[in-house]
Image (cartoon, rainbow over all chains, first blue to last red; front, side, top):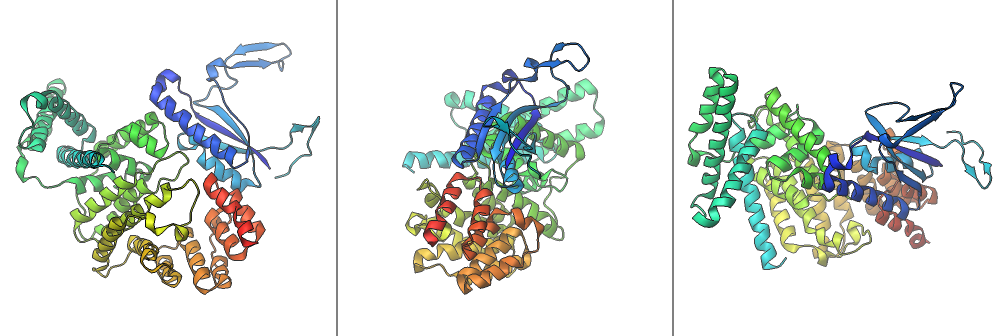
Amino acid sequence: MRYTLLMHYPEMTAEELGPEALAEGMAAFDAYAKALDASGVLVSAEVMQPVAHTTTVSLAGGTLVVQDGPFADTKEQIGGTVVIDVPDLDAAVAWAQQAPPARYGTVEVRPTATRFADGAWTAFEHA
Amino acid sequence: MTPTDEARAAATRAARASYGRLVAILAAPTRDLAGAEDALADAFERALRTWPEAGVPDNPEGWLLTVARNRVRDVLRSAAHRTAAPLEEALTAADVLDVDVDAIGDKRLELLFACAHPRVDPLVRTPLMLQVVLGFDAREIGRAFAVPSTTMAQRLVRAKRRIAGAGIPFTVPTRADMPERLPAVLEAIYGAYAIDFLGATPLVDEARYLAVTTAALLGDEPEAWGLAALLTLSSARAGARSATDDYVPLDEQDPSTWDAALVAEGEALLRRAAASGRPGRFQLEAAIQSVHCDRARTGVTDWAALRTVYAGLVDLVPTLGARTALAVATGRADGAAAGLAVLDGIDDPAVGRFQPAWAARAELSRDPVALAKAISLTTDPRVRRWLESRAARWA
């Protein structure tokens, strides 16, 4: 089963972090991704730019609204996502515990319902 | 280690011992750990400036303490000047200065008990000890715990503020309170050894040093000696763990890679603990290490002895880990069916996602489904590779 690990943590700029903390953070993510990869469970991993670089697009109000900034302003932001393919929730939780942001933020373990592969949506997975 | 490495390690150790002793003396009267550390940092800085020219004083620790105390006094004075502090506070400040430098004993025990006080967050106790007793900075501690140094620094600052603000005492508990307070101190020391994250580097030598120091300062606490024995015997096998990129289970490690001197030291510490006739969790865990280390002498692992010790451990602390280990030892001593019966008897619902229990079940039953589950719960790639190779070995 596929799970997306949504990593929420307080956002800090490279300046706020300083070069050493930045390097430590990168090393921790590096060790994590390499362990996922070596274990054959990694589908994808992305770390995002700060929300300051977000643009929000909506036509829900009847007109096109393109805005700078996030949809919701909260203290903790989604800073990265990791998609893994593991047998069950127990395994997904084991990997979530090892995610570096679990130590200073929150990791949300979200099962995939369906995904687009080979030209079609896959059958819905029921948890 | 080369002689130079050894000299450097000895110097580092001496500096860390001095640091903890001085912080303990400076902070005990005011409970202001951050202030004590700042004053000591100032004193060290001044020493580095003046000692190269003026020479190292006869009593370097006394010199550092005197300078640091003057610094504390300066800070308190300027604070008094600014805020017109009440008389009581001024008196407390004077108390700090009137203590006879030579007559002060080792106050690090008081410091350890403050760090592991019930009102201090358990997660910050180990980092706090590493900082205020051994002088590690937030960056080094953060690296050990695989946490950003900024996050670690915030946690440490918050904890020190709490200790000062909440009035957490710098005292060694009475004998009556000891059984309730000592486990938290030992647990926090053990925590420096048992860091278990990808990319983290457990501070094994530091944990061992703290354990031995604590046992010696307490004198007559068998569990403190037990923890010292456990960490010493575990350290003795560090060579086997780093000798290969592959995971090697304890009972398959090459005993010639173990440090015989450390094994002997661990055995001596364990005898000292056992002499009191008051067994405990850490003594039993050390005894388990001791049985494994004995294979260096006998050539075989005494699984029946391990089963007996694990049974004692389960009686005392029925953790999932201990119960799983008892199942494994029983399986090796009395056959797979007996081991599986112990494993099936574990009623903790968390057993269903406990990796060691699935690995034990796979080993005892040779059931490929259990093996697949164990592999799926394994996040250490080396252990995963080892588990994946099991099916072929059973065939």
